[in-house]
Length: 223
Length: 81
Image (tube, rainbow over all chains, first blue to last red; front, side):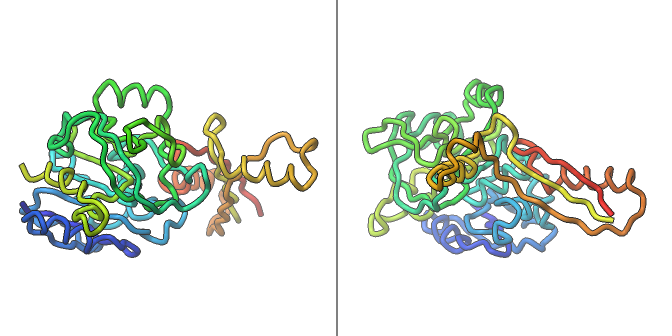
């Protein structure tokens, strides 16, 4: 599998993400935002975490105008798989490739810790190696992860099985972490080829790092 | 000519920063006076134009495309000078 990991000014998770995919056998290439095209043989585009353009104006607001994003949008429109992690999720929202928007965490703090996540829907490429109700331990690190969508939009997400992950405790009880609507941590688009989540599976690839629960998430793209 | 753009969260979208400031003002003794607080940002554009109508139309485009995220934010444009 060929993975294109997009790098903007201020991205800081591109090499962790490349490492995580290569650990599972993919060939990952870091693609500079100024490129007009992603590599022709790309199977998956990952927009990694970081602080693209210093989070100026709004997190992800500037990155979506980068040269390479036109190619990413075309790739997604043709059914290509795109994963946005943390700042990548924010960029996908700003680009309109996923519905909703991010607000500042309701605590107004930057939250950086391991947190549990509950699998809500596994009827998609990303989470198919997991089961509904599974509880994962994955790090979060963000300031603007307070996911917002209006009530009609939320109803549509549920109706189309687009709500993928929620924040929960170790027992799987859904809990508030950053104020996100319905404690949503990850979603996909209606066509189920564009995925976004705030937590960082690429930082949970080995027990030595505190958890290896990210492996099963990333594996979903391999099979 | 200048365009002064005010961007803030829409009514109905919970403003956590506003809430925190409201609380802080309460502890400073302004609890009875202040009913609600909303936080926004102001973007000031110096324009090369004398035509208020076309400038407003262009700035509206800027708001829709970049300056505001209309999923959660409203914007207001004042043309001055």
